[in-house]
Length: 155
Image (cartoon, rainbow, N blue to C red; front, side, top):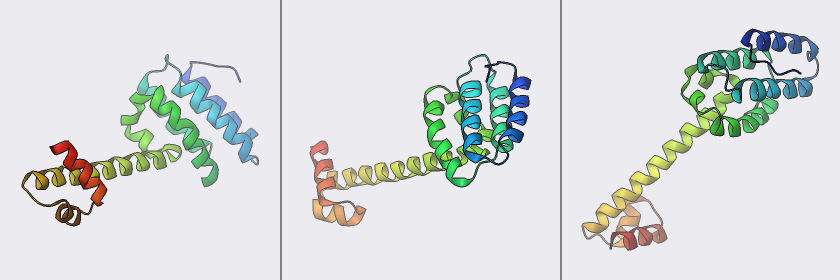
């Protein structure tokens, strides 16, 4: 597979590989991973909107079963976090099958982290107001140890 910076060439390659891997999803997985990783995510010569469109196109064109899609998501998430951060904000990318689950997980983790931070802040405020560690733990639904740690910080 030759490396190209021409978006049309990358799209044509995806079409060729679609037919070559028609009955072999493991080979398609490898080809798709290479196209998405080497040609798009780590290619600084592609404009971000072109890279996003290509990613979306290839992701749909080279369909993979759920198990392989999950594995590809795992493999590509490292590249997304390191080299293609600009693509994190693209709505197209968030809808692409390979990364949809990744973005769902990121959102859920962020939501859970925010909820925990809110609980910790509320616990700190209640401790400052003079509530006992036991009462705060019960009210905020944190463990006694967690509330004791927060109490140490508040002192």
